[in-house]
Image 1 (cartoon, rainbow, N blue to C red):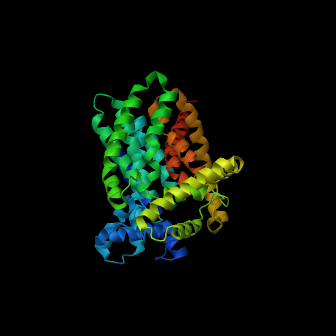
Image 2 (cartoon, helix red, strand yellow):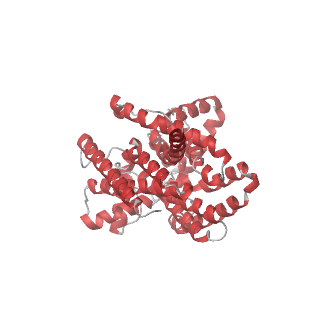
Image 3 (spheres, rainbow, N blue to C red):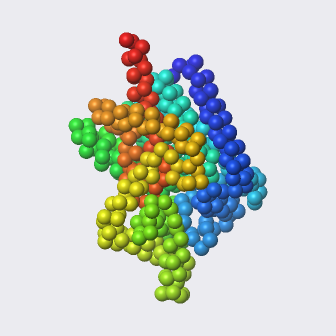
Length: 413
């Protein structure tokens, strides 16, 4: 990359930072500086507090409720500010992470195409993308997850570009960043095998680098998860790959009252029923049993009601790829227009890029595989437009690729 381009990259970062700081200010003005909007934020906050205080990693009576990635990132705030740090500090931390993600997207585009102009366009698209800005403001795990995901994909693509000569270091880093992403969002656990299988199917003539690189990355990733597995076994006496929230999350998406949105009120009913059946059950066993019971109940309901499950899948698909917020409290006319005007062009250009990538190698196709994976997850689990943010980050690169080619061809004519 040429020296004079670094000023453009610095300017990109500063604008991304300013946009997110303004959004944070507006959000605090709307809901209050010391309030959480989502219930998930409180769980991350208290777990981060426990880590900083050296207390057991538990939320209430639940010991395997959340992956520790985001709470670990929040924990330094409690060292710096004491027992009650300002929530604003956590927002600023996510704002910084979100701004770094913009640079990471530009870097990923540059790794893939070695075109600084294209990289900057992808970065600018991400910088101004409203949902990406919003996820950088909320005290949720999406902001660090997106950063780690981009770095994971970037080093995977970098390894494919040099495979097998100098790929080992990139493969190692890709596995480490993939593990970090899983420590923030456990649903990412199966992405690497999914991408390898899909990539092998669509790249039969050149499947060996995909298979070998994916296997190494996944192996590194699993090695990084071993401390969490040991801890979970020590706590519960059972192997737990990620958390014991898979069952509740699955039932949240597949149950007689499911609407596609999240409503976890049913947890109390399951909990009370289990305690009634087993009055002397320990909390750790109860947590495990509830996970198993809810998972089984969700699968059983979907098996017995395939038409309703299919109808729910379509509703969730629309919720995921909707052009306006699904929550009524956020579905303001101005917000809807802003999202529509920024989302639709990137989506259309990104889809064109997906189609175009069929004629290129796996490294470019790797940009749209997250969209398929995320869609597959959220037509089963609950769905919301915020869950598509990682997919749209990758689409921004595809959109920049198509848009720049159109501009360059137009200039030549």
